[in-house]
Image (cartoon, rainbow, N blue to C red; front, side, top):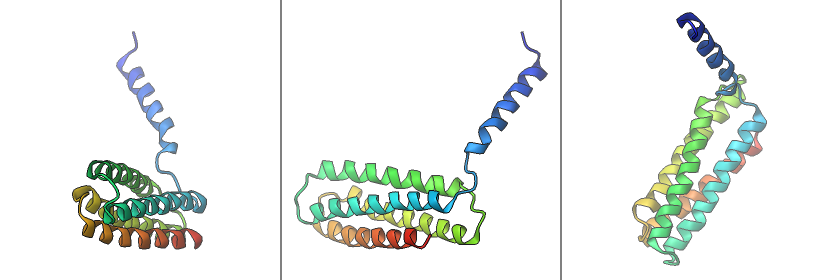
Amino acid sequence: MFSRSTTVAVLLASAAASLPGCGGPITPDELSRSIGTLESTAAEGAFLADDVADDRTKATFARVHARDLSDVVDHEAEKLHDAQADRPDVARAKRRAIALADQIGTALGQIQTAPDSESAGRSAGGQLSKLSEDAGKLADRL
């Protein structure tokens, strides 16, 4: 079989080969696409919230769909957090995008927690609409 030092060397080489794909420098185009995902997810959440506010959806569906949307937002926030930004303008936009993702997740959490509350739906809908607009403006500035 292989010696311990050979096994360690192979493992280290494999780990080193996998590093370039993990959170390398993010380009403005990549950041813009990620922000676009946040924008569209917030917009979809706003539609869901409007349905909750108007009592046009089942609570179970609203809860599950809000959770799914929140998972998308969490994934984008994780990717953004792990990415490096070499340019100051990209770093600022990345920090703002992470903050937007947090706010979107919080608003979606209102729906997930109270999927049968019309007032929570109205509140979340207004927040998510504004956050979607904010994300669009941020992406346009890149």
